[in-house]
Image (cartoon, rainbow, N blue to C red; front, side):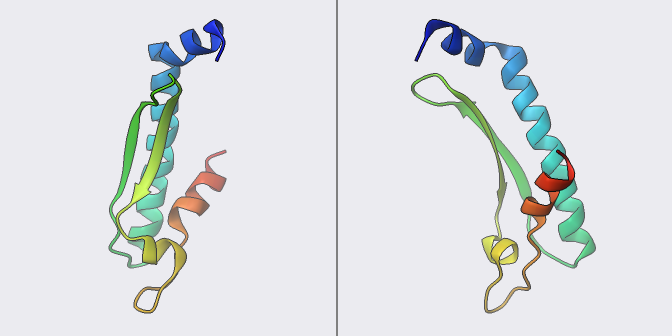
Length: 86
């Protein structure tokens, strides 16, 4: 990884931007889940990988609701929220 890329990913504004975008997606995904009667809790996990790359993940505690399953209707809340907030 080049020096400038490492510095860019260590920049607090870049990390904050990633997190803000992820939080926007998470809020919309939670609203979709709630409106469709889902029980999922949508959260954001952020950090810096060992080689220095910043990341933010939008995570659901009910993957069966996201992808569908025997006992849960498929909502695709995180996927839909990500598309809506582009």
